[in-house]
Image 1 (spheres, one colour):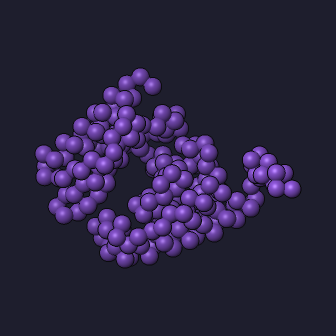
Image 2: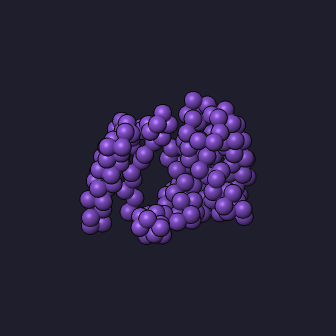
Image 3: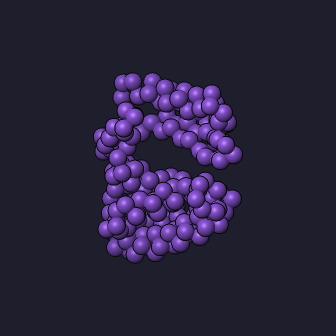
Length: 189
């Protein structure tokens, strides 16, 4: 996608410009397609990630905020947050999903899977279940809320994780066995 790398570089520069207003920005990773930084503003920690996902341009939508900045709409945020469950499944991702569940009251596991699969085509109920089961949550990673204590955030996202695992387990049982699964069964017999 022409200009995409330039857009990532410009966004990274915008993040790094936060230093001018007293924010600490500690770069964690920086490639042509991904940038991650741990930041702190007024003693409040947060992370920033800049991701180049060309598929997002095909399936996502943006709206213009009152200040003129273009931001992803809620459905696009839902798709991206659902897709993160396969790749990183962090405490913040679960917290954001909890918030999105409040905005999409009819959201269920099957819809969450289909929304996330628009971003990550390999997303299945089984892959989500494996990712969630293998992602330990830590109270120490839940200090990002301005209105809740880390322990409260942890309790909420741990509950959501359990609910999602139950829903994805049920959905995985209804999914057809992938070709590799059939191959493994034949090799075992």
